[in-house]
Amino acid sequence: MPGDLHSRLALSFARFGTRTLVEAEGKAWTYGEVEALSARLATRLAALSVAPGERVLVQTEKSVETLLLYFAVVRLGGIYLPLNVDYTEAELDYFASDATPVLAVCRTGDEPLFARIGKGVVTVTTLDSLFVDLPTEAAPPASRQPEDIAAILYTSGTTGKPKGAMLTNANLVSNGETLIQLWRFTPEDRLIHALPIFHVHGLFIAVHCVVFSGASMVFLPKFESAAVIDLMASSTVLMGVPTFYIRLLADERFTREAAAGMRLFVSGSAPLSADIHRAFESRCGHRVLERYGMTETGMLTSNPYDGERRAGFVGPPLPDVQLRIAEFETGKVLPQGEVGIVEVRGPNIFAGYWQMPEKTASEFRPDGFFITGDMGFIDTDGSVQLVGREKDLIISGGLNVYPAEVEALLDDRADVAEAAVIGVPHPDFGEAVVAVVQPAGKFDAEAVREEMRRDLAAFKVPKQIIVLDELPRNTMGKIQKKLLRERYADLFAG
Ligand code: MCA
Ligand code: AMP
Image (tube, rainbow, N blue to C red; front, side, top):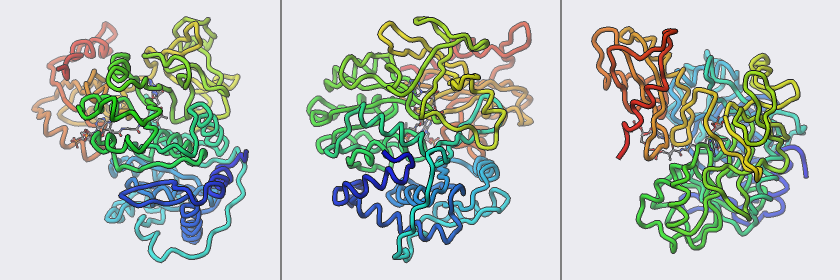
């Protein structure tokens, strides 16, 4: 198999030429059409200076055109940098300044905003305009090595600024190859694609499983249970975050009959509770296949296709992944059964954070294992259970929110003395972001929430702000977040 991503995609484009690759809004594109259109789009991008190693920043809606843009950038050996469509100007400005892209592609109407970000250094174009009078010639593919960077995906951190995880051609190709074997993808599969395409989950895992295997997918703009249930009769696989499964269970149209034609439901990005796992099986007869991964690593573990898919477990490591449990502070490897930090090594582990060599070094052990920040243990059957996180992170509907970022915004306000941001159980999102604030003077929680929307993507804005005269502190003066989490555990219950 080729080690660079474009060659791997091209293999499928050639092999499955006349078969459908993607459907959206009632239209269909074959493998051959996708190759031809992305090659012509690459000609346009090359004229805009996209070349090997150059970053292309993308904030566009989910569409087949965005998918073609991804393939075109890969063809030219550029570095694809997709961003959440919810990101605000303040968030975008950081990414553009840090990544110094040669080109930014935005939604029509967002050009003035994009002209302001990144100190005006980038060329800005809209996705729509890229497709006007598309050149007829196909750009020649650039030659790329497995270790060259194919994409940068930003992830936030417990401290400091978001970090750009650099994913190589080899990372993406190897993970895709492993997963199509493990999850038995064939050209007969049709995936219901309801995830966003600016994360590893929806872009690399879902799209590469489809393209590498010659399968097809139906693009939905977002998850909606009615549309997903309608598609089940003519589809075979769904990949989603736990909220998808919670919402399907809440829809009475979701029955054993509705799911009869499906062969696989995959869940990840956040913990799927054992209760939901069991409720799903008793409703439709399928056991959800839960897997675990990260932006920096792609997929790391997966429950088996055949064999027991254990509720509450994320399965054994993938065949080419080495996984161990260690003591966080010392790095001492712990025996089977003990809880510690999950550390991993393998061909799918990223090449480091963009322009942050020290940060990169601090997240790897000297022998090359990456420290995930997740806590877990390995059971007697080799299956991993995650029991928590060493990192202070909230996962809401499969999206990561780092409390430090939200706290910094609140702490900066004149009407806030100090704020603590916590995750509490939520029936739909799994966890929800809640801020507990000690005000400095007059404080209007709803007005503050509204103002926060200017600077933060909607999913990071606290669903509720609780006002306390005093935040609980330990003897060292540190805010007792654990106590707050316990106190507000039932905030969204019922
Ligand atoms: C939307 N909102 C959210 C979320 N999504 N709030 C908290 N958490 C969220 N995840 C906001 C909306 O802006 C809106 O705010 C309000 O909540 C209600 O939105 P709703 O219509 O219910 O949301 P939705 O549009 O239906 O989206 C929910 C969703 C979506 C379907 C769960 O967030 C989603 O597709 N999540 C998947 C994310 C994902 O792909 N994660 C993978 C990354 P307001 O009303 O105030 O405006 S992790 C990864 O890639 C690693 C490698 C891995 O392991 O997979
Ligand atoms: P991200 O940085 O967005 O890629 O999120 C990665 C994090 O999501 C991991 O470090 C885990 O904490 C979490 N995660 C992903 N899959 C699972 C899962 N199946 N169960 C629990 N947590 C998960």
